Image 1 (tube, rainbow, N blue to C red):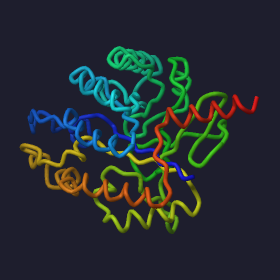
Image 2: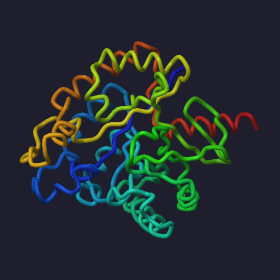
Image 3: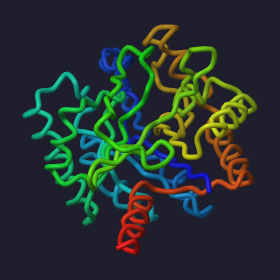
Image 4: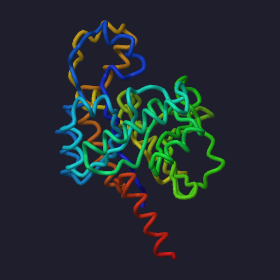
Length: 288
């Protein structure tokens, strides 16, 4: 059965790399992260549970929101401390910040945090061992999209490809966010701004093309996309950035729900990372 990992990066509008420099210019007190609860409740009501990668900055400002998300049945995972790029940190800096974030999230939810996703897919191979040392058992930072100036493409040669878009080394897992190769070009089809920009019929076409070679799929969104209201003083970020930020936002939630309903009709199973790993571990136990 095809598996679909629906994920949310719980961060704020000013954590976006192209907006960080405009935070003080825009000076908006609007916060989108606390307002994802109705969307996540609707997903849970439809038995669609997400893996939510949480920034420590957001968690400290909104601990009750994080607790509510966990109580609904969604998985809480780690997205870092301040949305800093991983390759801009030393190994020691990364260890300290991610260790602190993991501890914060676990204190808020009372549950172990096992997963991590690097901001802007900026993970490096040398820092995977840090995650394992800290007690994580999976990373979801792999993407093969060299055309993006911020993304980093990790080397998976030491991992075994055990399933569609899933790699394993000993008892640790790496999950790949997909792109689609069309005429030698990588097309990002995994969510975010691309899902807002492309019409729904085209996203369905891309999904069918993906299924020609792969079964599993990872999709990601952000709070500012689910909460479609206009950002106060947003036009101060400039026309190009404002278009990039605003395009498709007012109708994103409705579009995504239609997409999910279509996916269910295609015999797709929505899965959290922790549940997928739990089943894999269970299979290994039965094999023994």
